[in-house]
Amino acid sequence: MSPAQPVGDPLPGTGELPAQVIAPAPGGAERPFAVYLHVPYCRVRCGYCDFNTYTNLTMGQGASAEDFVGTLAGELRAARRAMDGVGLPVRAAQTVFVGGGTPTMLPASDLVSMLELVRECFGLAANAEVTTEANPDSVDEAGLAALAEGGFSRVSFGMQSAVPHVLKVLERTHEPARVPRVVEWARRTGLSTSLDLIYGAPGESLEDWQRSLDAVTRIGPDHVSAYALVIEEGTRMWGQVRRGELPMPEDDDEATKYEMADAVLRQAGYEWYEISNWARPGAECRHNQAYWLDWDWWGAGPG
Image 1 (tube, rainbow, N blue to C red):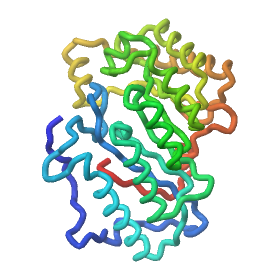
Image 2 (spheres, helix red, strand yellow):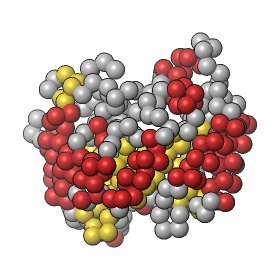
Image 3 (cartoon, rainbow, N blue to C red):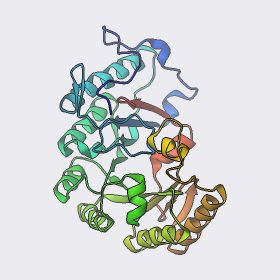
Image 4 (tube, rainbow, N blue to C red):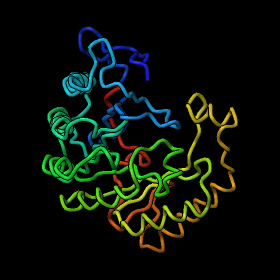
């Protein structure tokens, strides 16, 4: 990716957000509150990705991974002042989700510091669900232990597939054998685990998808997400499909794979609770549910 930063309105020089950026919803203090933090850094930008992500750890104009926490601190404190300015009540965050990008490109100590900023600016509920996304090759056991000790309760690993040629098409860099290892590390620390899958990659057969589902059930995470690949215009994969370098997945094929996922995961003891998500009883992602249930939430970071 280019080192250019995303186009958007900068934080005003006063450090204050205008009041019109906040629209208080009816219910006020009775409405639950969630926080999303976006970390844009990745080692490799996958060809299908249309999120705001960067492979450069330094993006120009003084913005870099090294000063990310300090920049986020200013943004969250400005958010809190803006909320106070329109009379929003103080509500501790019930869920915090750190997404990306690959949040675990940052040191675990930085992610813990980000969580402390949420606690400082909004408060954190005693039973808060705190999740970070991670790639299987972006963590080690010591880092996961530091996250658990620092207040994280959950980690979502981007497995995507258990089949090497599918991972190659998706431009994922980890080896399939890495996934059960990192899940076991997370379990030892007490973190709840989720695995993300993507189905419908160009060249992925029904047999390939079955292999991925079988691998997930053998690993046995607490939660599984399975997303149909959407090839967005302007992504590198969109260009490959447009030029005929990759076959476009068939809609019927994707529908069949969704049905396969539901059947295999239900048989393995997972319950379907939201379009693309299955969980062991009691392991549903509360942050996912927050969006569907229309909680109040605040997003911070360059996302």
